[in-house]
Length: 227
Ligand code: SAH
Ligand code: DHB
Ligand code: MG
Image (spheres, rainbow, N blue to C red):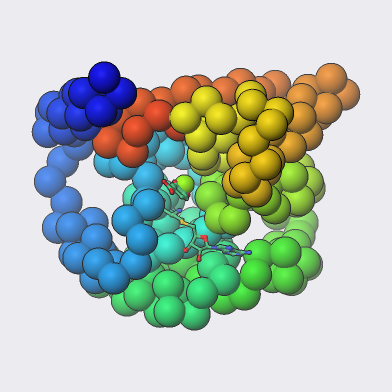
């Protein structure tokens, strides 16, 4: 039954993607070049959600944590104006190399800085370099157990009115199972509690959006920083 449902979710995803998302040679080439890496990039429609948000707020500076082979990076970088910048943080040198090649092929290399290293190690330098200009949008999509730390950084690095999006917070509903000690699930739960504290403090307005589709059942946490 679950299998049948998720098959349907994929078919419906494709139906919408065929109608709403343009054929995209750069993205197809990026996926092909990332063939040896885990295929855990955002879906086409989820990518569209990110880019609609980025364009709607007129993002000029974007921070991404978790590059993989640059699928979401390409999508987000394309939304930027000519003087826009995207900084993406990736722990794996191999992933970063493939992502850089994909970004260059997409004609976006000049707008994107791929920083190699564990994000908690590279974020301090990003913070130092970027001030006083803050980011308009942060997309958090790396190792889930560090999500509470990435959230704290995002609160510092994103401007009031900017948006923070965190991927994979639902994990097929496992997030609400207190007995589930998988580090990714624990990270999703801790992230949600941390966002909730910021909500209670009046620092952000936030929500969570459950998603089904070609990647199964998961979801995003989304917050905007209040002035
Ligand atoms: N955002 C990408 C998918 C990212 S997958 C997309 O949608 O296209 C998660 C990535 O985070 C992997 O490439 C993994 O190597 C990277 N990662 C894992 N731990 C990390 C860390 N501590 N710091 C930075 N990147 C990390
Ligand atoms: C998986 C999916 C993701 O979006 C991610 O960032 C990491 C892992 C997964 O399905 O395993
Ligand atoms: Mg993800």
